[in-house]
Image (cartoon, rainbow, N blue to C red):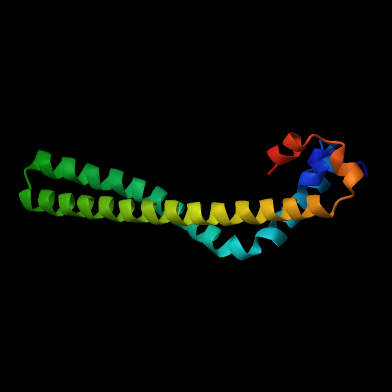
Length: 142
């Protein structure tokens, strides 16, 4: 197989539909094998974002109840729903901060792992095959 910058980086070149399907499957398998240690944090981020989405629905429902309470003049319900809205907003703020922090940590860890692996692969390649490409071009993949 010819040694191209894309091949060195571990990505696949565009192929036909059947080959692309196989290539996609191989890519997903490679990503799973090399990202397994970050799977739990990724799932936590996904779950946190799903909860944030549900919080958006709850926000709309509570807002509706606040408006209904204000229109009917029910002061006790208005204060109750306003406090629920405040609590939900604080919860969403904290969850959003947690998700973004965990996403940044996970992203940095994966990026370092992938770049280290790529650099290691570059060092192990045949010098003639690697030197055929400009060093700047190879560094762009890092």
